[in-house]
Amino acid sequence: MAALAVAGCGTGGTGPGPAAPASQPAASQPAATRSAPAPRDTAGATAWHKWGLKPLPPAPAPPADKPVKLSATGPVPVLSRIPTSRKVVFITIDDGQEKDPAFIEMMRDLKIPITMFLTNDVIRSDYGYFRQLQELGNHIQNHTVHHPVLSTLPLARQKQEICGDQEILTREYGTAPLLFRPPYGAYDTDTETAVAQCGPRAIVRWRESMQIHDMQYQVPGEKLHPGDIVLAHFRGPSELKGTTMTQMFAHLLKRIQEQGFTVARLEDYIRAPAG
Image (cartoon, rainbow, N blue to C red; front, side, top):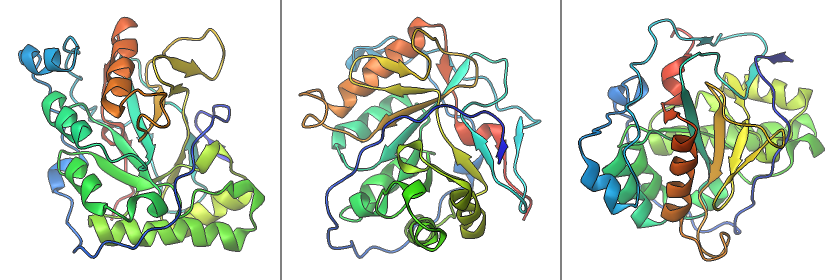
């Protein structure tokens, strides 16, 4: 295992059963979404106030020398944080079960970068929802077709899950996912083999997971560190005890701000293999 930073296993969430796939053409991901820094208008306090928030500081310009450099061959690294001294963290959102239109409005207003790890079974009823978030400059990454516990499956089944999601997401969103997140954070050496053979070039875990009002740390009593990867989920009131997706996300931004951090785009700190 080639691990740059490994965190303990957290919890994910399974979605509803399969729905009929949407028949929509693939959309090309704009070149700007692959490397451009997230625009952050700190003067637009009105937009932040609309969501009960104070503006976060702007993210620093992406580093010219990316701290994570991925290879086209060989073992895939496992990341739970990015090596950096900057006071930035990276927000990742999993699954795709909740499709709240207000969350798209929130992302348009705040221009906070997120990375989406999507499971086909729960997004197939509305691929277009996530295309709207992609058009804001957010990247779509691999999270399997059905969200199983991969470490309980043989290599052939793991490849079906990972390669299947890779193929669907590439077709629907116009670009091949570079990163992979195992459901529940559970993986083994067969997972590493399957990821490498299916196309993604790194396995991404996390250091903190957002609950409803607060973050849960891998180590109890911990705090944010520069470069931490934070996990959240596309969830709604039925899973969040009446809290909406936008309310949960606002709580997340407050927790980040309270510790003196801002949010940067994960992919801006990762160099993809040439070609």
